[in-house]
Length: 140
Image (tube, rainbow, N blue to C red; front, side, top):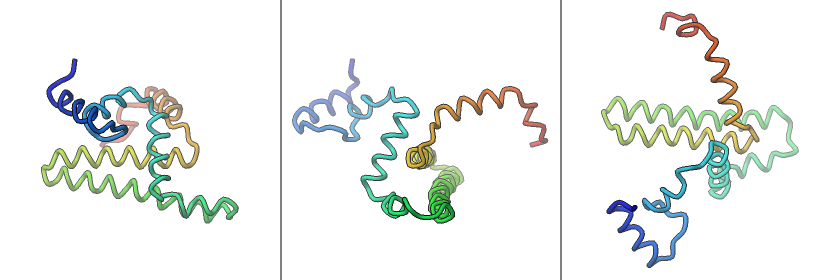
């Protein structure tokens, strides 16, 4: 059963024959994606919007040059974390949540671009963390 917002969006979507928009219906259709599916979609979108043009032109470059570009992708993640902190400091919880989503999207994009199976890596790390001491042996 659809809520009122979804009913309104559904009527609009039928009129527009839309697909992949950000309305409540299309967003709800994507709520069961795996981490690896999210990675695939985030990376495809980033490529489509030109974020990988420079990196993809480096296919035959040396490893150090590629790593310099990968470092830039990491810093984009850091900038999203800083924006989330700023939202939190200002008490703007909606912005805080939006920026956390940006962190996840940037991370997914990077993993997609580098062929990292993040879902597997998360599972391995969570298993490892279960065996670590309280606060990993640190005071804070």
